[in-house]
Length: 107
Length: 120
Image 1 (cartoon, rainbow over the protein chains, first blue to last red):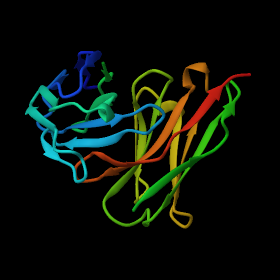
Image 2: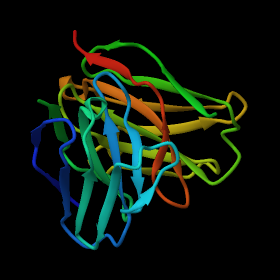
Image 3: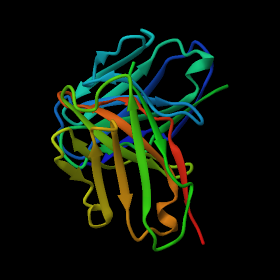
Image 4: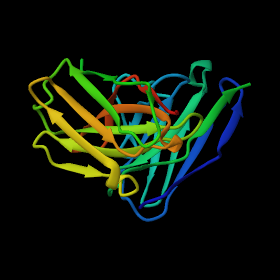
């Protein structure tokens, strides 16, 4: 099983600040890494696919990068509505796995 | 617009079988290259993939749950289902059904989730 480790677990950020979340895989997964946003009492929402590909309808301030074992989700100019928990997810091999999540709080 | 909706008992007794159904609307469960998955999330914790079924009926399960899980599909009702046997308190979680893109392996549509509590 591929283990995904996110850092940090928690981040408190002021609006308009830049947020960087990293996801490290226990073995190479190419670009088969996706990012989701989950707000309280909601189901996860797809943000980024295949490490860096944008999703229609997702604000352009969200971007992703990386390949192999190290990946990054960046939120440029954080807005209040971005308060949520962010998860990475690998689809390279079964069982599919998720990172433990990074909670982003707005100061 | 595809929509998924979970349904089933919110309370299950220990050692019994948890049964949930996901009803898909806005598209046929049989069309396209999609897997239909179950994912769960204990309160305050992360996401765990349970397993999936393809429209052909082929299944894949998480090895950690494989001995207790059965996922099936009813194309005539546009539904797929989850059965988890011999449940314990550790199976208490919000259960989501989701559509997985068969080409890209990502979950593009999710149900709203349903809380299942295991308690006597």
